[in-house]
Image 1: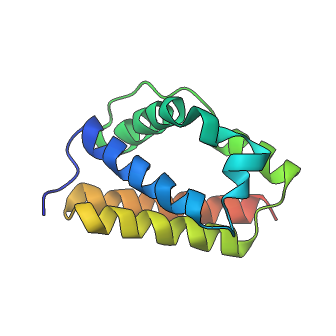
Image 2 (image 1 turned 30 degrees about the vertical axis):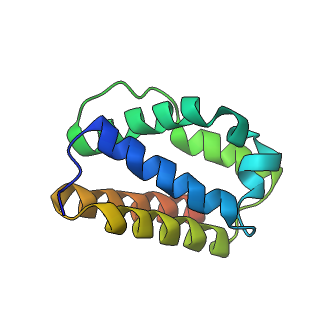
Length: 123
């Protein structure tokens, strides 16, 4: 398996990841009822790809406040530990099914760090 190297690789991960999230009834409502993200997935994937390009490749371009966006969602319907666990599980499975290497491990580490910080901040 190759490592994550391009925006297209990130988009492949995001599409597979969201396929899993949208099928998981324990978390899918955030995307279908709270935000309606499911109706704007291609735009959302583009934003996510820019975020992860910045995180993994130091490419820049992401200007949103990721924590504030998720805090706003948390205020509408509180994230619980199991939501973060599902999110991490699906992301790890998606990454591991397609990629192996430094960037793949870095993406998983960064995701876990973000989820941990959010859980602490949202208590």
